[in-house]
Length: 229
Image (cartoon, rainbow, N blue to C red; front, side):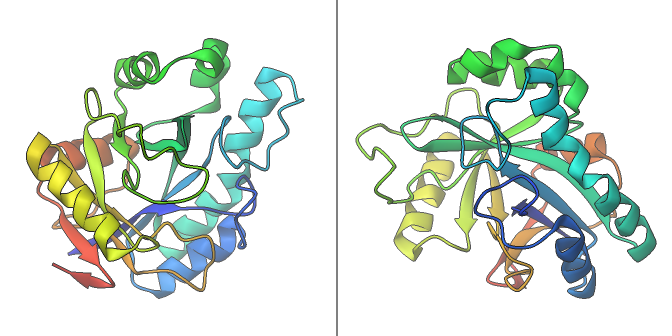
């Protein structure tokens, strides 16, 4: 099986990140992973990118820091994919996977004011895969009175290594009720906490479009606390 991390942050784009993209790639290559998806915080989240920059410069600041990481990944034999963690309100967030580029967002500055359903439409128009991240996480900044959005998302993060067991259990129950795709992610912010979660596929995936196709198949096996289950 080929293992892929589906939820990782770096200090290049996430204010809460502790490791560089290159450090993350090296750590996951050493941990035997075939790929990693960087899902750093986007425009409304805990981002390190200045909101005072012009829109096109902001978008370039989100996507260009990974070029060196991609080159390193090729050298180390690990695929590097770029996603985002988008905050849509009330402390709730979605993870977006696929062929995300700065250009796609530069052409769509309206993304900054879209509600979640408009944002989901935009993602699907681009062929991207959207997962609700840690839907039942309990934190002071999250409004627990507002239920997570399930209409229009493709999957649910049923295992987040940084969540409490009961929070993950509720996410799994919701996923079973809705029939959405199950996803697992470490939500790592440091290279020291790598390899705890993700998805394992029976064939190697090297392109964003192939990753989306594999996710839609629902045939990936979850990695829970470092074990393929």
